[in-house]
Amino acid sequence: MRVLIDGDACPQKSEISELTQRYQVKMIVFLDYAHISQSTEYEVRYCEIGRDSVDLMIVNEVQSEDIVITQDYGLASLVIAKGAKVLHVSGKIIDLQNIDELLMSRYMGYKERQRNKHIKGPKKRTQNDNKYFISQLEKLLKYQS
Image (cartoon, rainbow, N blue to C red; front, side, top):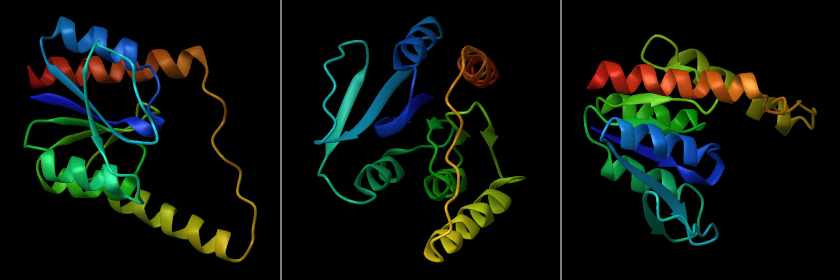
């Protein structure tokens, strides 16, 4: 088991690193060359800059039993099909029971944006959001261990 992170928009990498070290699980952050990390706490893998290049790298790397952290529902659907667990950056666990609904909401948002309708983005993260995310990750790590 490893924790694979879609690193462009994932918060709390230091806290994730602390948890993965505690559970002795490898952490890999995937970034494109537009997002350079100076951290030495975890492994970083880089790919070319381009739409979905990080996602494709993760899909090619993921294995059954890995935990993938992402906010991309398309990526989530692909790695679930390969047997991975998915944790959204909000702390929501994405699985076969909810992925279809999430993909549909993504599609509906896309259609609304095409009609120039303004859709509110997510609310600013709170301390409670951060605590919930970390607690959900710890549950997955305990369950997988």
